[in-house]
Structure formats: structure tokens, C-alpha cells
Length: 172
Figure (cartoon, rainbow, N blue to C red):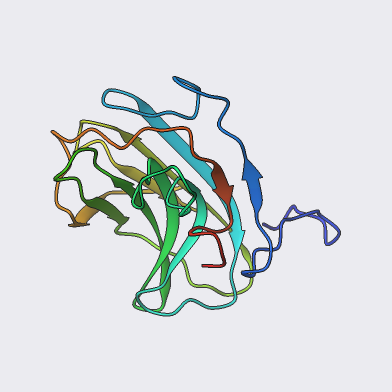
């Protein structure tokens, strides 16, 4: 971002470092279910992204912690490599025995050019048409490409941790 000073503090996410936020318990502000809306934004700087890469910005669950289901992703904002660009991508896993991952990708992305870029997503669980993204201030629609539309699916909700900059207990 042009107004950030060269000495501006940042969290370097390189597969060796991430930030952990504890969920305070049942029905906390970090527990999203049907009817709840979530908006997440971040300033990011990337030098490159491989096509098909899924780089975590933030996610709750899916950390492979003892006592939690393997695919307990309540929410995640990731950057997905598509055609050499980084696209905001929202992911969650639906609850129940027939649960699956649902992934929504923004149609817009940015070139990973080593400069700061602003990304944001907004989504209301239970409303498959509510997904929106913003890339450097420009709004973008998107599409569901994994698990299909999610209008009738509740997300997994538990008290697992929120990780900024990583998932699955290690790097990307």
C-alpha cells in the first residue's frame, strides 16, 4: 500500500510462523452458523503464487487437533492461484455425516508483484448467493467450484483455534 511506511510492522507468513487465536468457548464471536454473516479483510503482499495454490490468510479449525473432527473448517479466507493471479477464496466444511468442503472463489484477483494489496470477502451462511469479494477496492462476484452451492448447508461449529497465516498445523 503506497501509504504504508517502509518500517511498517507485519506478520511474515512463510510456513514457519503464524498467529494463533483461542476460541473462548461455545457460542463465541468466532462460531459462525446458518444465518450468520462474516466479513474478513486483510492487507497482503506476495511475490508469487502457483496455479492451484491455496494460501491461508485466516481459518478456524482444520488444524488436526486431538478431540476435533478432521475437516472441521468453520471458515477460511485464502488466496487461490488462478492464471498467475491471487484470488480471494472463501472455504468452509458443512456439518453432518454427509458434510463436504464448499469453496467460493472471487472472479477478480491481483498480480503477486511484491506490493501491498487489499482483499476482503463477505458471506452469509445459508445464502449461497451472498458471497462478495473486494480486491484493491473493486467489488467482485464469484463462483462456487468445490462442494457446490451451500444454501442449505450448516457449517461445522466447534471451539477449535483460529490461525492467521497457516492451517493444518504447519505451513500452507
